[in-house]
Image (cartoon, rainbow, N blue to C red; front, side, top):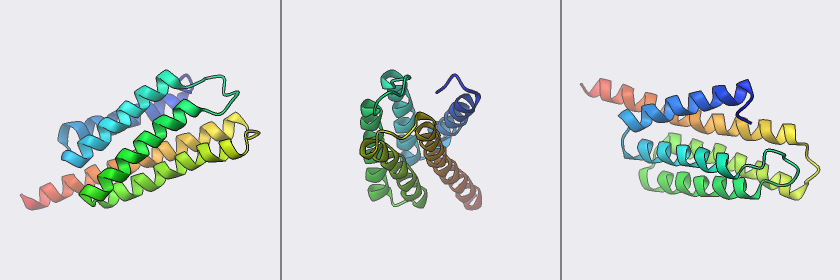
Amino acid sequence: MFHQLIGQISLALMLLVCGWALWRGEKPERLAAAAMVAAWIGTSFVLDRRFKDIQWATFGVDLALLAVLVGLSLVFRRRWLLAASGFHLLGVATHGAMIIDPKIQAAPYIVALGVWSLATVACLAVGMATLTRSRAAAR
């Protein structure tokens, strides 16, 4: 997954956005960024790169990240957190589709998970941009 160019670009973007959030974000941005990085690390340990069967361990990691994002959206009431939770829920639903129909080919499964992951990270980037603008306006 990360040996392909698109995986490496996605990883670089995720690390860039999460690094920005950890460095300059407020509590919800930092917690979400830390959870996203932890989920990436967890996924890299449990991912079955053969994709011969359902990715149960990855599904568990994604469920944990979804719980964190939903919990943060309930506590902090940030729009970007709601959107991030929604996109990540689509990633979890992609696992669900594979559970319902294991005949789904690996390539569309991987691409769908990648798209939803990038959309979730993009929500964090939008949240950081909004936070940066509001800080600049307050000065």
